Image (tube, rainbow, N blue to C red; front, side, top):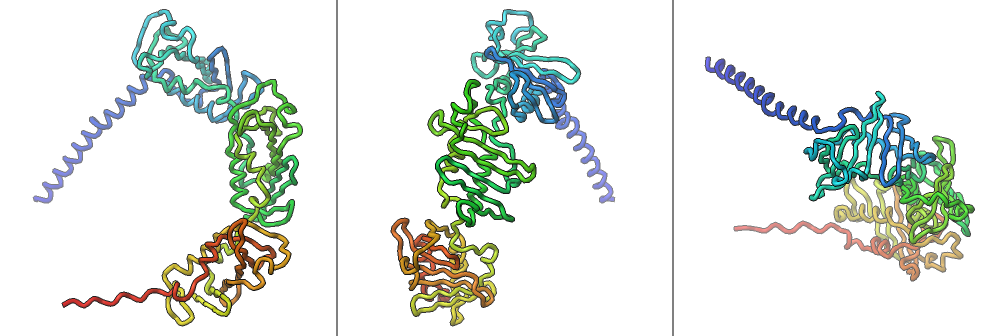
Length: 455
């Protein structure tokens, strides 16, 4: 009977809790939503807006919706729209809120800055209506703007953020995208800089290869970074309407970057011209008329030497890095052999090495980048590589995967000459040499500390 009574009390508690939630908390939420809805000037859905017109500083800019989230500027004609900005304004229009009423009667608008509003925003709805709102001067505390609907005499306060959402420069409203493409869809790249040989790159699987001026592997990260810098670049401004391609240095261009978009099967071409001011350049998408102004990042990358585009890896182990199971280090007549046993590495006498020590050595080699590449070395003796002072061999299952020979030091650039299975000679940082310039005593695991006897 006691259990039954407890169950009844629990059910009563649940019912009361539900009542409190729906009458207090849920009721407050609904009331807050209703109050917020009352503040809105134009309740509705942004998708119902088919046209937006902005009037400010004697200028009128209009755009119409051409798709779900695509917009087209109709005034002034001939300008590409930044659809994201126009779509955001449509979303903001239906969220505009009014605060307290300042004057409910017809009054002189000059004291509120509404005779010459900061901006007038008009939206055309699908049902044909054309509501508008005027934003005037800020109040003394600069927390609100004076505002009014176009079809009402009431002057009210509106948070300054609402006026800011529509006070856009013409540059803000225009399409500032440099080139329209997806990096993953690009399968070839050509950089033609005035006075320099062309650099041509081609994608092969997941890797990039340099095809001109010589055929070598490319630095995948460098190419990907370059493509991303173009894909996400935005114009900082647009040239005056009177500017032409020739005067801007775009005919012929100082630099031409050509990307082949395999998805669209079309070339995307970016042109660079003169510098109108420090660290900025006239530029143009060849498929569009506007001349815009870009920062220096992309232009500077087009000027870098071929070496920067090359794969500078000392060795290319890739996923095979973790499968290396033997490392041999030869210094003159001294040989040090390290073998993997399960998760551990051991010396030839069976002693364990310090945890992670050998794996870190291999990892350092795999990540090291050359600071110089000599494609046609006159002879290994010139670099101390005919009789290397240190030679490292990596094996897997008894088969040689790669080797690295260390020659004499180089002064410019500073480092040490190295030679792998490739035909080139490279300069690597001295740190790489020091990593493998070790003895067994440097690697062996320290014996455990003797137990301390206690009385």
